Image (cartoon, rainbow, N blue to C red; front, side, top):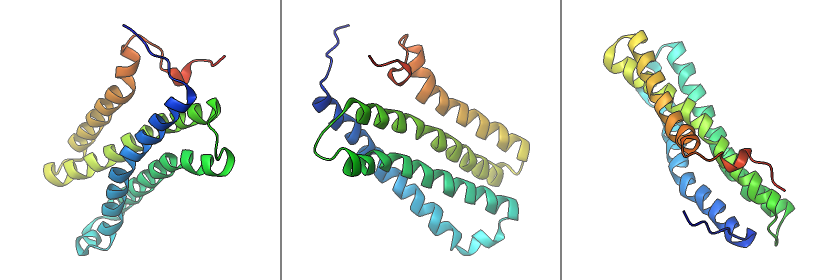
Length: 156
């Protein structure tokens, strides 16, 4: 396989473009999470289910914050220049953002399965299976590629 090594100037737009691609989806989900609280049916949820909703809301907000951090950092610290540290920091943050997303989607899978299946244990299995699938796709697949993910390699 032929590999082209990019310069920092070439790499930086890729990192910011990846964040820009993810951000609208996360913002949309955050909006739905927020609006649901004001829905009349929200009051019908048990206190535990409302807490699950709160946790899912906070996780999606955390994901959004992680996605926006590279831009905030760059504007404040490295404006007008691109450093290896910025590209690596952005890559790590965009990799970490997947963790709160997995947790949030797992919580939502539980809530939906619980409402449809009326069984807490089965809903937990559905949510756990779904979460493991996402973890496998987002973290396992890069590891299975045979190469150690770049964020875990030492830079020289």
